[in-house]
Length: 197
Ligand code: SF4
Image 1: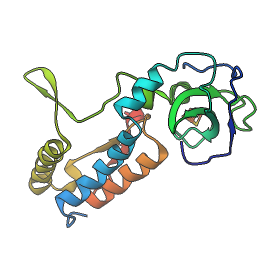
Image 2: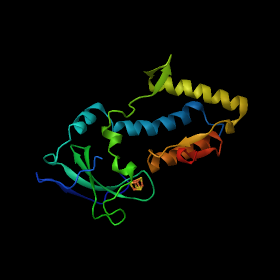
Image 3: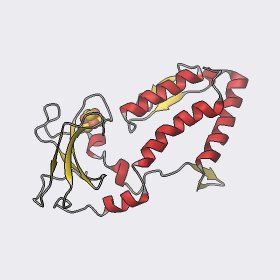
Image 4: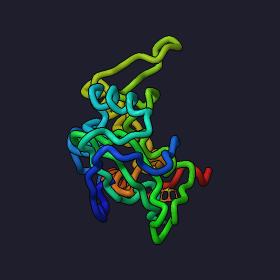
């Protein structure tokens, strides 16, 4: 959401517009932590406290003292506009940007639900692993060590191209850039987008 802050304005208690409900030599720890850093940055915006507030934001009136931040959806290169209501530094609600010169108030389903990255009760808050058919939480150290050991074993046995790096339509442009860099440091060009499969 930080790619382009076009302008901000403070709310004074008036009713807002329509709501959208919408390289092989690299040490293991180093590049795995590089990957984890992106997820961690995302996690910063997803603390339980923030979520609680955001889920309580199902109302029409702006929060007193909140700001409307005109910004750009980061899920693809089109650059559709989003108006984000920000209260005490927390993104609590999403509005359409009806007069945006690119999107004129329109969004695809990804942009329309961009705030789900912050408010959805289904979003991942930590690494998970299926153990005996049941999803269980892992710590970041557990996940990095376990996945890293398996990845290194694969590369040692079959080479760096034995792995395929698949992105997602629900990562930001910045996360996609980091994903591509991670594959390059790993030593493979096997990078693609999940939707092409
Ligand atoms: S709303 Fe959809 S089309 Fe527009 S920038 Fe976001 S992902 Fe791209």
